[in-house]
Length: 595
Ligand code: ADP
Ligand code: MG
Image (cartoon, rainbow, N blue to C red; front, side):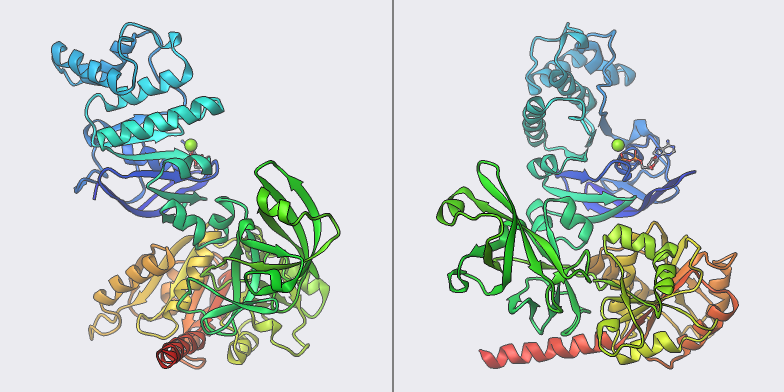
């Protein structure tokens, strides 16, 4: 491995700039860090280069832990966004700068400089000054300069930032060629997804200090794990459907889904991503090549040459709704057609058409919707305006739905039901919901408080493990919050969680849920352990996996809620997970039989 980052974290006064970033980058790989402005990309890059210190974690370059090694000795070359060439020096002096600092003899410097100018296609420009070059040429010199001392890692921070479109395109190709020729492990930072797609071997998407997802460009586009990445990498319709055993129901039809989260099961609400190019449109149901999801009305058409963009209005139902506004009566579906398809079936606004989906992808998040249980609209407003719900709703782009707890039906059990307690330690309502089949419930205790820390409570061998990690990962990706898993270790008897299991837990969390978690062990009572991590009420969000609804953990939680209430408590049921396992076995048997 060329670059290994382990839980790298960095905070400034304003809060966390980089949170627990863990990733391995292979030899010769071109890794693109992509994310909106302020997401922590530059901070992470500077930390790798040694230009900024880190608060926590490890940075390993080619097997050597350089976390405490100074920048000069890290064998890293760095290119900044604003051409950082020395204006008063010739290109020759610019390129040789790092070599002079390292006392390389003049003859070798000259040889290296000439090699590099050739590499960046600027042979013979040795004696020019930066101001005599175009922006693109200057950035190529900056690359040459960064490579002069033969670093083993090249870091580029938005190197195309200040250039116009055509030059950017040329420079992208040039840098990609140089990187391939030299074979140097490279991290390139950009906020431009097209740039990321055109250059990367793999892309790491950052948002609010977290590395949200890592993958090859095509896989990230086709199978994102989060709403953020799904929508950041291109246009996407986010829909709510229903899981079946091995497929998803959207509207009137069932569609096969490619990926399937282990803890989601039949009957659960599914968050589905449909790209505009995967929406199929026909005049008749039987002209569709895929099952029909329903009938839509053409709301808007825009022809842009190679393709036509459309917006279609679809009526919402219990089996097909917008994941952004689950309670809207209808929603807009974005579609795109090729010019050829437009010729075959010209459409006009107001026309009714059949729609089906040629491809779709199910997000692994268990938080498909936010359902606030409120008897009155005032109670609903109160829940909706709580810090936690506001932050989740905004970041997940979900409009919370009001559910009347008195009304019969299963609507209250789907996605993430949210309740507040009528009495300080009366957990009967949330437990009732879990008992009726909700997979998780968010209990709000300090509505006005922002939780700084998430504490995950899960027994490694308990059945609620995957469901709890899935819920915690989804929450962590959307909240600005420090995440720690609390694990009980019995000092005297050596019982409790063994360290081997702890490592397994961390691996599962990282592999299946994309969340690297810090783990802290505690001895004695859970109440004391939580109290020690919460100096005043409302500072933590507890996420607890319940293997059963009457176990010991629940007793401790009641105690905590009564004595040192956290901002919120997420109770995750182990039942959904048992159910999912049973269904997985059943569908395997079913498939075996069908063969
Ligand atoms: P990006 O490169 O993705 O735009 P940065 O890494 O520059 O993001 O910044 C991440 C966050 O850290 C931002 O909120 C920014 O304001 C903050 N930050 C970055 N550098 C400093 C600094 N030197 N002092 C204080 N805050 C900083
Ligand atoms: Mg930056």
